[in-house]
Length: 410
Ligand SMILES: *Cc1c(COP(=O)(O)O)cnc(C)c1O
Image (cartoon, rainbow, N blue to C red; front, side, top):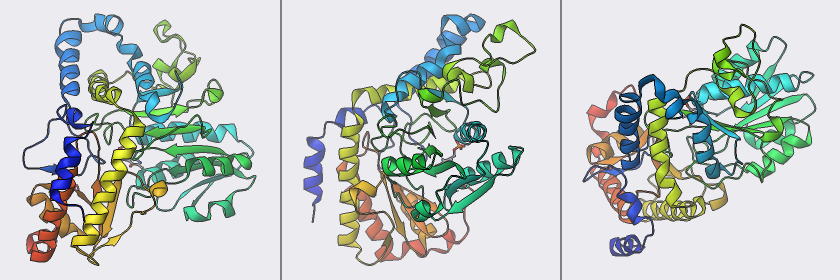
């Protein structure tokens, strides 16, 4: 069994130690919810005040040009691209994830006009399910959305499938899917592949180029720490530029927005997928949050992420044998950067942990979810979190009647 001293020794030799200083973390708290909302970084604070006090307050309307505000969605896309293995000018930062999925789904359905089926995972994130159903209704022709058990995907692939949309790391269980294998299978029947990377970007190594992905999108506010409601990102492989249309074009997706023409003519490249004015302050926040990522590599992040989740699982096995059902695969190739533990009183478990300064979250009906973020989480944090968890379980604190009513955001 790993001891607390061994964890301290691991931290003392951890190349990520200086990066932790870049984050605003509360003393006495262990934050295991960076998969839901990442913390504030000093880079983000610096960049937001630059944008507000410098570019906006001083430059005012001139900053659209002088500070490059109009290009920020594309510049930021290029900064983010290495995190997913995209090439230059294949990533746009804009909107929110659900809206970007809508754009890609709507555009994709036009690319396969003779096909009628869109496939997604029955346990996909609810927003993904709602938006794919809505885009199918809006397509103006018969589209069937099949929500399947993802393990049976091969049985559903045929030449009537237009698009397959899957979330790469399951938001409940933390299971990671085989991006390369699935993308190849989908392409083998001539369908298009859209990956939702909400729980993957900044969490696991990704290579959308190597795996030949058509389209992808993900969040800015989870592992990337861009702030609540941060802009999302979308990836369109360059082979689809000028081919995939934006179903929600606005003036800033026009080839010449400041000609104010009444007829739409699409801009080229990723600019085609813009709709509206960029959210400049929010883009500044995400820009600042991305600074710290330039000081590491996703390969290194992945190594530490697996070490942290391995440690957490081993300590829960040791201190609380048989108390939880582990929903997250033990196999490294199938694990994201979170651990999900099932318990009938999971809501009370999480609330009791939060009261004791260990912040995880709860996903109905019975999942305790813990995110592991190598940039600022220490091995000793994992050790101490499991000690608090053991205390909550053995003392019965999780059964307190105060936890019988749920808060609006769990
Ligand atoms: C977080 C999340 C979303 C929601 O993203 P919004 O930016 O709020 O639209 C959608 N899908 C998945 C898989 C998520 O994890």
